[in-house]
Length: 316
Image (tube, rainbow, N blue to C red):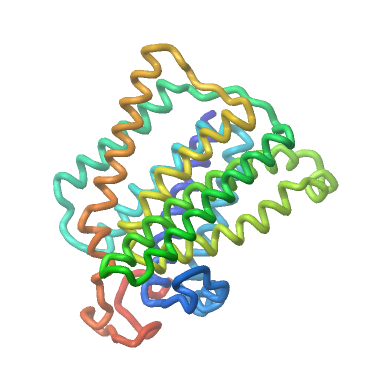
């Protein structure tokens, strides 16, 4: 369990680094298919070094997550990834987006306490290595339906109001979080084949779902980060990813949590603390104001998109 926790923390840090760098790379990119899905968005973003640095960090985070899921249950590993928002908060503090207020620290403390209480009270454990095919089909179809519904809603929000970009980012962040939760379940399935040789890995359906589904989810995440500030998309990433993955862990792999009356009461309180902390922290002016940062206002900066900048991450 200790290995799973340490690896999950490393994955969380890498994912936070990826979110910040990819947001910095995508903030001034306009999607040619903004009313829907722009399949060429990834190729335009790939011209930006900072976005590529974020992609590299995401791949490293994936490797840590894969290793963590070999040693721990989905219901244990995925909630730890919610700490990603704390790391994002730390990045924005270092980048000088503004003074950290007391309520920001209280939100961070509430989030950390909620996560600790949840893991302590739930004590997730157990589970099988492989889930039945019928359950995988059901989980996959439900996830696909939710994602498609979210995309339709996000398309309808385009250009309807000045705040439509923020709302669109929030919806896309939510469906991306759900999609990442499903991909975490696929990673769990895939991890069970790693010790059985190349033949077992290459013959596993999970490898190919991981490649195709991972690419599609990366495209979703890129649209969410390009649509609006981190404050809009990050709650969906942070809350719905571990929630969806934990529910899938119980549904697909038979993982279980402590369900006594006292445990359930503490788990409910912990979830409330965690969700409240995430929502409050995501609306900190450190994140809300990040889209107001302008390279032209920085020493040595320029207002040309993709041009030189004094921003600490610009040379990443």
